[in-house]
Length: 397
Image (cartoon, rainbow, N blue to C red; front, side, top):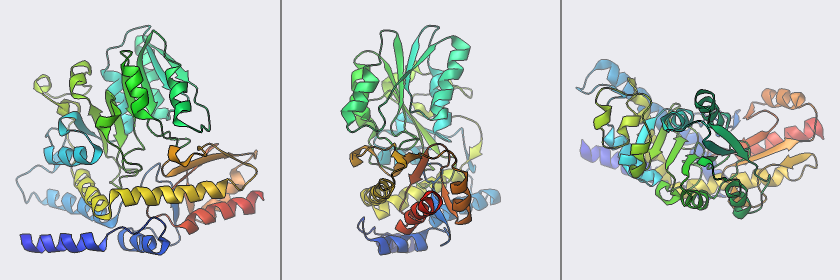
């Protein structure tokens, strides 16, 4: 039995070996063999929710069916259990220790656990940026309404050309009353990659708590949490890491855990020696975590670095196409090292509605609003990006 499993795993790994970043034909085969996306769908919105590979869907469904049968003596749940193998696998991939990692459902939940768990008093200041996701802002404004803290925004130059511009904009906004600095690792509206380690090091040297909203980091760009030097970090896995929806993590640095209260607890929480106390949330669907392990295996077999390279290759292609339109204002940096797989822009047009109508007719799915965002993953075809921009040209000239 074990031999058959080994041979199956070995054969699968060989079959999923990732091609070079610019080999469009080979990546098209990866899409056809490993994703259920139909040919007619141009999916350009991984930044909201990713498309899980077939094996991830199968692992999730298989575990759900097995759990319903109670064929094993293990509860088909999580929410009370330590889930150490799952935390260990994720910690290894994300560059930290399992003792500092808690399982959650998404970055929004994790950000709220952080904001609610910090002891802040009236007059204390939380510094955020003007590029934060609504969920990365909302938790702090709830804290303000309840406790009287102050919130101030650092203005980020858009588009920046260097990491130093970003770091200067954030760090120059710190004041003596600043107690917490909360910022995105990659911004949701512009795809901008912040110099996380540089910002955290400077802020912590001033005694400021550092919070990283890393909703877009895992799976989009290489990351190593321990190298960031942050106190806490929130992330979603169902965007770029190809997991089922509803999978996230909360990182709490070991020597900071005594300073962050858990928000939802079960009896005995005070005896917990690591980040597990932040994930005892009551009964949850463990099948999603089995799907997460399948997603990790898929990424590792393809090769994470090759996935990052393909994602970035497609984003650069999208940037180049967008730059050709005189009425497109690019929000992403002209320095390609400051973005991963997302390119964002605005249009110098008063009404976007005709564009949304035409894109819907052609089954092109992207983030819609005043800011348009193209999110590319390994299942994205260059023709998907072309279809978006060809439609843009047809509508607006």
